[in-house]
Length: 409
Image (cartoon, rainbow, N blue to C red):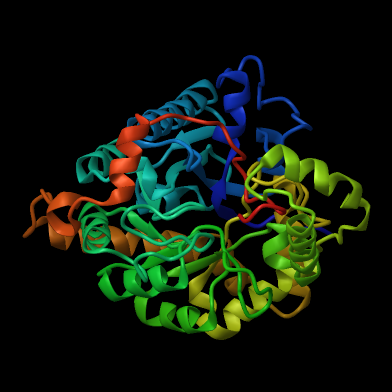
């Protein structure tokens, strides 16, 4: 029997999925079943979701002011969504508000997380503006490096964070915005942990020891979470949780290179992959269980959460196909001996605690630190990347939005 327990999920890309219909919730009414999506209000309730961090994401192909504008449009979409469904959703910006939702029964707490440091366009003023609009975490990179932080899926340039990157972390601490280390390189993870005065999160990452993918978290970093107080929120992305799917992905990428296919050409890669899809392994709920148990064993039960990445990927593990699936995962863990206390920490308590502790650090810092007026030029000097982006005039090319299972996520 599936038992519903409270879940606060760290990452859902529904806002970007709604961009396809111009953010028109009349055209795509999530109060009704939406089988082409992973998320609707009915299935959120069925899944026991009492809180959701909605990702306000834009691809790395968006540069400069275009990235900021598209991020603001995503934020506006979440605010519009909450306003349209007031009996089902409520905008929440604090740990106190998040904790009040945990018992369920009322509206689902809706929080904002900005995915990708390119969204601030190298501006601490923009970072502060996002906070004022309700954003409560920033993922320091997406799939490509920023001028100030290395990504897990790009060639490292900095070895972690630049001096401006460290100032971004410090300013997030001062504001009370959670530092999200999903998508960043191992060097950036370590550098951020060295700098931060507050707990960090991984909003949607799993364990690298279980599945060797650069988007996952190594044991050396998981071991540091107990000292930092942070939380790794296990994701469900098949290539991140299933060694078999990851192996298939690497084989396909190598075959494409051998055939002369440009792995940065989305259409060419999709055409190349299509004939091979019948051989693709299927990730399972058991794969996700393995990551939960490993992170609990290494980091501790106080440092684990859930960040499914629904509507940010094309496929999901069997048994976790949409947001109604969380009870299956929690029941599977209960069958393996996880207590109700353990499941509550995984499901909602740990991330709520982290947000509260981040707020306490901010309260202390706000009493003695004003807003940072630093610029990337003053701390890092002008970079060729910045100049190139300026020369491009912030041109925008639409690209894949998900953690692709073929091209590097």
